[in-house]
Length: 111
Image 1 (cartoon, rainbow, N blue to C red):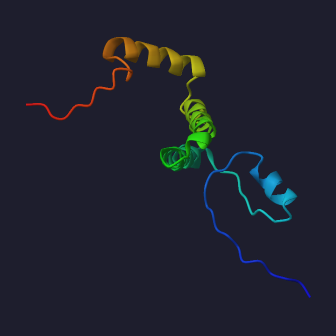
Image 2 (cartoon, rainbow, N blue to C red):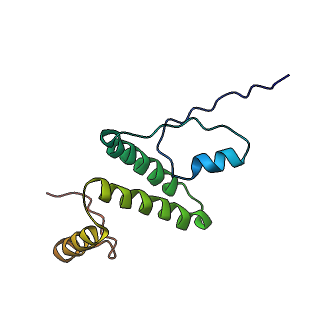
Image 3 (cartoon, rainbow, N blue to C red):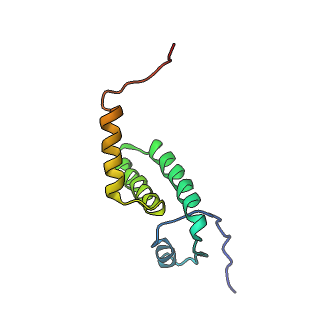
C-alpha cells in the first residue's frame, strides 16, 4: 500500500539547488525551466517575495534575507543585460547626484 502525499503548489522561481534539496528530503519536485520571456517576471515576483520576507524577518534572519534579495537583484541585472559593475557604477553615480539614505530623511509633503 502506498501513501499519497498531498501536493504543495508553489508556482514560483526557486534557487537552482532547491529540487536537489527537496529530493534529499524524500519528496518529489515537479519543475520546469522558465523561458527567457518568463524569467524577468519570475525574478520580479521573487524580489517582492524576498523583500516581504526581509521586512518581517527577525534580527538574526536579516543577513540571510538580505543575501536573498541581493541574489535576486544580481540575477535581474544579468537578465536585463547588465553586469554587477554596471549596477555598482550606476548606484554610485545616483548616490553622488541625489544622495543616499544615511541621513534618514523622510519627506512628509511638498507645498
